[in-house]
Image 1 (tube, rainbow, N blue to C red):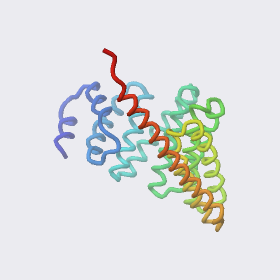
Image 2: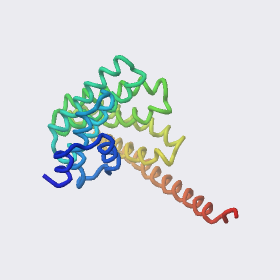
Image 3: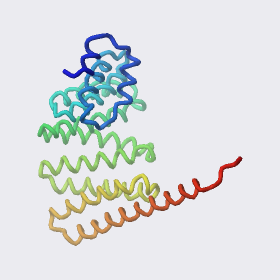
Image 4: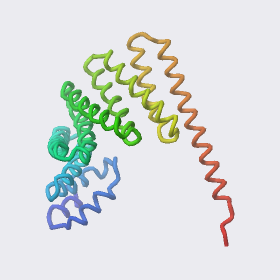
Length: 246
């Protein structure tokens, strides 16, 4: 056991200190993951509020996954899902987004363990929640819906359900097109990535002409992003060059 962990396990440490350490610990960081696990476990175990406990459990799950402790990572996020499902039943407006996020993480942990059917079921739940949320508040939740659809496509592909995987990734691409048009700096990278996935999926069906067109669109998105960055750098340089008022 390292010295850091010994300090936090051998003597009482205030919750304020634990929280501060958890917040400032960089993520992802394999070098600090083991330290973070010790802190996050104590924060989760000592939480008075169930909503706080669930949040720390999700963070704990991510750190455990980084360390390759897959079963423990799954157990932590499953606890978070259970808590957030109960909270969402009582207060859906407040806790449905957190539940969807936890389900997305649960799907990833299940996929890490090769439990493909369960991984798909979890991401399908997440996507359905985000779809409902996006209908009411598209600006807030369309990005989450697109991400979950991309993940759903991957889980379907893992099971050989290629037609459904294609439909899901096409939906994700269409959402990211809309988002990138409105906010190019924020969403062009996502658009390029999901278009690449879409092109690869089309190639599985030997639809190479369509795949080629989509790859060209992905390259154009990368080029557009480079231009947005260049323009922003020019504006920043211009602003910095302005003389300051005395």
